[in-house]
Image (cartoon, rainbow, N blue to C red):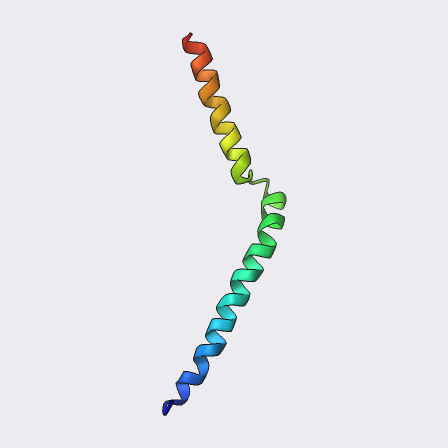
Length: 58
């Protein structure tokens, strides 16, 4: 490690990991605050729309 810039690599890894952790911790708050439906809620809505279309065809 002759180049002193190599000392920044662990700090960049730490900063990236901290950012990802913060993003994941605040994701529920952001979704709840903004009213964005969760993945399961979107799937449920999609399935309900498909079911309603099938019922209209029959």
